[in-house]
Length: 435
Image (cartoon, rainbow, N blue to C red; front, side, top):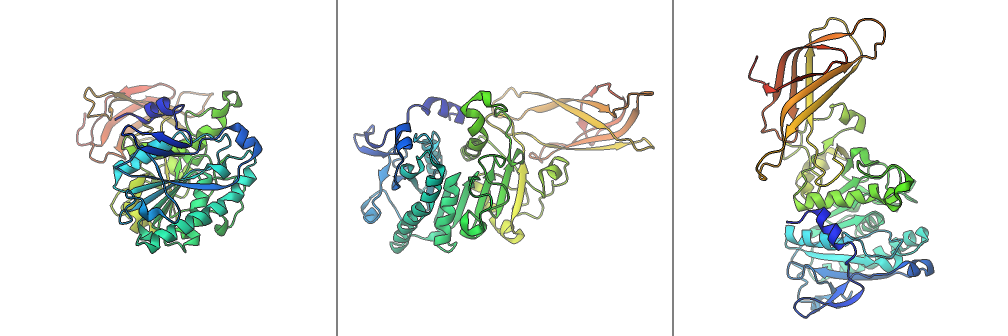
């Protein structure tokens, strides 16, 4: 299976234009509306198109007419339906992730995947215009869903996946339907013009029976706060590793953090990422290791970002709004192994300082064992003392607990003598062993 990085590199400049295209079997396909900067400068008026994809046509969209959709043979109302709703499109180009998300959703479950193409409306250089169109687009989609319901479709089997401004659009649809939609997923809901919005004016937990939200750019294009039954905060929800820190990087400086929400969701959906999040009051508490217990959740483990977070729904609804934090690497597959470190010292007097820990790993020889094994640990202490003798410490025990892989043995080492600013390296042992 190709990685997400491979997919984007091959497809970023090969998206279909609006209208019809012949697929391999000679049938015509309806594609996402492709506009350009001239449309954005002139401005576009709202026009909503609904493109159907299923396992039978994962790469060939079928446009559904709002009133005559029952005549479409591929549209089976007894199946669950996932609606994919994009956000603001300042250049008018189709989102590079659309095709990949559609395919993965169809592979994961036998569903109707409907891409809500409101590019005519979202493609305006004036962001205020696009924001205003979200209400009208939501009204349009609400009418279509009510027609589906009249034909026998169940609201609780529907899943709305909204990206950026599309997350609020999904919330408006859910509110129009009195919160009876089964699930809404918000991927970095848009922040500009929504920062001071009331719950009725943005995505909120009452919009669906279950609302999960991912935050990756809260200090710029994303929305701060908690807006779902569970809110995931990648690396604290703001700056993402690997994204440019200066404006000299060009467009990537503005969009990288915001787009990371989709890349993380695709990676989790594809099964190449396992992103475990830890319910916690704040990111600082998470980094300090104060929020690592998840026995209260059913199943008895911490929730994971992605499509399958629905299995924690019962526990999350009982707990109320939950914040969950996790860390990632800078690139695909983003998964970072986390360890809890416990140290017991012999020293009598309290000293403030910093402990630096490095884990040295070896890549496994077999691809089936893709997680590295720690073969050496390095420790160094620094108290900041610049006058007087170097501080010495005796560790009676250091223990490392792998959080995401509980089946792995705990790693320990006993009786270690350290001198300030001098690195000590050792091989970890099973906690059942002693030197």
